[in-house]
Image (cartoon, rainbow, N blue to C red; front, side):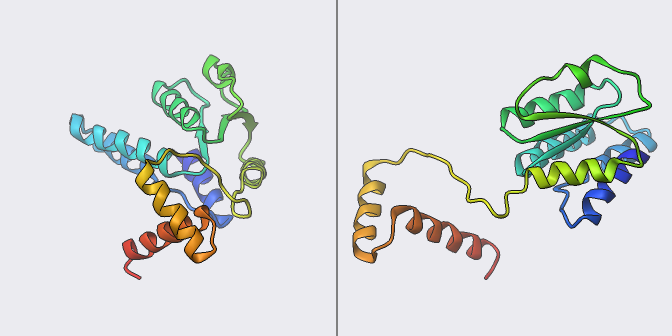
Amino acid sequence: MDNLRVLANIVKRNGHVIVDEWFEDAYDLLVKNKSVRSDWTAVVNKRLDAIAKADIVIAEASYENFAVGYQVAKAVYQKKPVLLLHHQSADKNAFATGVIDNWVRHQEYTMEDAEEVIKAFVEENDIKSKDMRFNFFIDRKIYNYLRWSAQRTGKTKAEILRELVEKEIDHENGQ
């Protein structure tokens, strides 16, 4: 728990946001010695939701843990860059060294170099300055509207869609 808190503080201290500090909820359940299944279901759901919202995932995998493995697998499936940390003092386990994927970077660390390791990974995967691209399928009605709107406004179809999404985001945020 102490290592997780230190790692989380490094992320925050460097100006980044942690989607959800789910590990505090899990720790509270362990300390209170609760074993109510619905409480743990909420913690697990928060973990999976946080992965879906995150740009990158940092996983501490110094000790074999099925839950961490599952989370890493979910992140890889969602094509999220994953930093798989393994503390230098921990035993070498199969999980930490066995996951091989283009989305996963293994890194052994100490508390002294953890900040440097995390900063390098975040900078390597910084997407602030990059446009993101994705493809999706539309029906004929939407295509015709976008084509008509593009001709009418002189904007590209992508610009029209971006503006619509930005307008929806502003609306959701009460602006």
